[in-house]
Amino acid sequence: MAERPRRTTAVSGFHCALVCVALTASPSLLFAQAASPAASAAAPNAPVAPSDPAPAASEPIATMPEPAAARRAPAGLSLKRCIELALAKYPKIQEARARLNSRRAQLDVAHYAPYSEFTGTAALAAVPDVRGTSIFSPNTDTAISSDMGIAWQAGIEGMVPLWTFGKITNLWDAANAGVRVGEQEVKKEQNEVKLNVRRAYYGVRLARDSLVIVRDAISRLDGFLPKLEKKVAAGDAEETDLLRVQMTRAELEARESEARQKEAAALAGLGFLTGLGAAIKVPDEPLKRADHSLSVLPRYLTAARLYRPEVNMARAGVLAREAEVRGEQARYLPDFGLGLSVRWGMAPAITDQQNPFVYDRANFLQYGAALIMRYKLDFLPQSARVAKARAELEAMRATERYALGGVGLEVEQSYREAEDAKRRLDAWTRATGFAKRWVIQVQQGIEVGTQEERDLIEPAKEYALKRFSQMSAVFDYNIALAKLSLATGWDVTGTDE
Image (cartoon, helix red, strand yellow):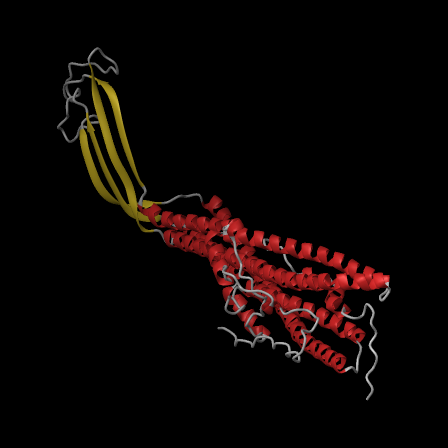
């Protein structure tokens, strides 16, 4: 078969810049997902997405480079370490922990307060000098005289509750439920921070993958432009080809700047979340697919009912309101307890009366214990308080039903989003493999002379577009799993790097 003549024009070597054309054709594939990081029983592991078929041995194919082969991985924080730092240092989590400590202190108050209802009193006063007995005294009944002395008194009295018909135990139950609410509030903040850290971390890697590809394309153009300029000057190439390449070169600079801005924004957000600030470092490695394989939807719905913090907070709220209703109903009944009292008074200026039938308010030592019934007879106000507690209980039960329904809807939406992301990722992975095989076949045809270099434009462009779509689909799938983890309260993202 006769060899086809080759055209010596701008097409020769122009395939070095074909990836640039693909980059400018669909820039949203690069950066639409480079997210701002500070926004808002394990399933079997899934295999990592299959790699593209290897090209045939010859000169390097002038298409998009693989990010993994384009750079070395320096030291930096893994995703797992970033999450650990965020859980330890993020201010919202620390705030939630402080509120939890406050609720635990309230629980201690509930335990100690019923047994600490003792009152201590003390007094120091000036009294007139009074002598005699209850039958005769040389002094008069005057409060102020020329002879004054000092008197003092001290006393402690209170009641230890023995039986309150549930007032104390229901108070403890309500306080315990409040602690559970605080614990779930901490978990809620932790789950939200995990999502934000993953979004920022994946965003950094996606932006860096994009930078690798854009910079490789720019370097290829820079190597080709001088040759094309000479050909245009010699009349061997058309000036429109030169203008087209120069325009592509300028657009690539804009895409590079945009990728650098997305990387810097993601790093800044990650630094804020982890508490490291500008010192944050992320390994320069390509974005990889999370190693979780989606299970059936009922499994995630069940996990949400068990682990979702908002659902557990609503359940704890119902328990607290039920305890409050029981406590208010118990106030219809009296309290029984052991009353204890000790009082001591001394007035040296006043004669101590030794007659037990004389009530001596100046010099005395009194102590005693007795069984006491304490009953507050405010039945009408108490009935209103019970009605108020029951209404709040019904409101909390409605909140629980709303939480269960809303969480179920959120889980299903997140699950469908993850399903869609997985299907797109699998499809783009296959499409990328097909596009690379197309490029290989065309290049082999060029080498044997059956095809021209111009024939490489379309397959190279398609490979670049498919590779970008695959990268974005990996990001979408990882973020969809992170959102599903947030919706269920169960970490389904697999092992963090």
